Amino acid sequence: MAADVLIALVRANLAASVTILLVFLTRSSVRHWFGAQLAYASWMLVPIAAAGSLTPLDVSARPLAGARAISLAA
Image (tube, rainbow, N blue to C red; front, side):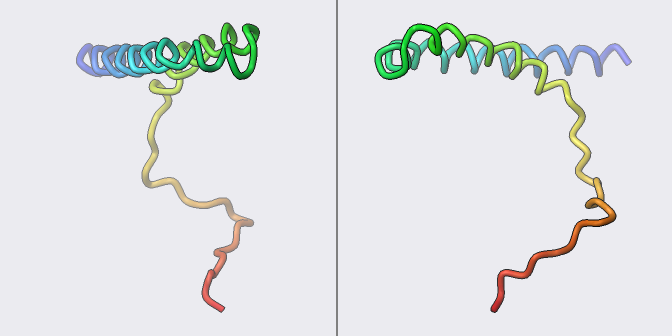
């Protein structure tokens, strides 16, 4: 149980760190092209990425009952 919490915290920290680095590297370009308001708002990606890393990954999820398979073949 404690190991699961520790792994979740490490994943959240890693996601936040990578996002901080990406926002920091792109903030001057974002500010130049889109304005200061969006440059400041881009920092909201950090807690979103951290929270997103905590969501469970259910690889065995089934599609919705009403969903249909789409064939790309003609």
